[in-house]
Length: 188
Image (cartoon, rainbow, N blue to C red; front, side, top):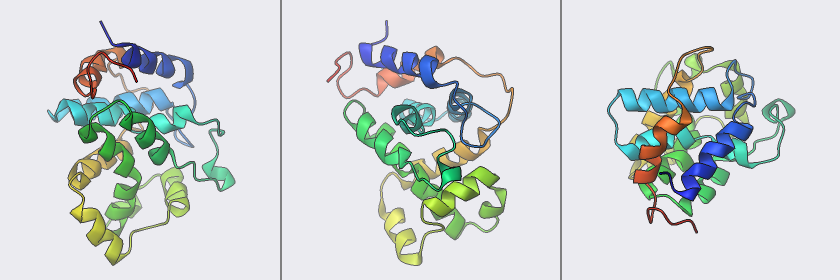
């Protein structure tokens, strides 16, 4: 049986997961499930699988419209998600989520050809998020002990935009989420 918190996350996806994922051709839930499925297929630890599932939960927590980036609004979803997740989950889940936008900026700065692979909505949000990192930002990002997990998550984020791709259900990731609770079975 899932904890009340994990049950509430499943319900959040049921209630809000059908909203459009920015200007992409998938919903928030489809995007999250595809990212988590990619992490699971790579055999990553539960924390990275759950982070892939929950990396954009900030979009489900705010009241901004789906087209906020088109309106020139950065929703700071990674910070909202990080603050919310930090109340309940271990850092190995929380920090890659908090850093996944920074990881996009990082990859655009250090990996030739990465920027060209971004979808048009991702390019638009990159502009709102500060563009590619400067050399000093790259150096600082690389010092964060969670940066490699954030980069892996970022790659899943970019890949998880395939319309109609069959995926597991949110409920199929309950085990990974439960394994990452700060105090299993307790909701604060």
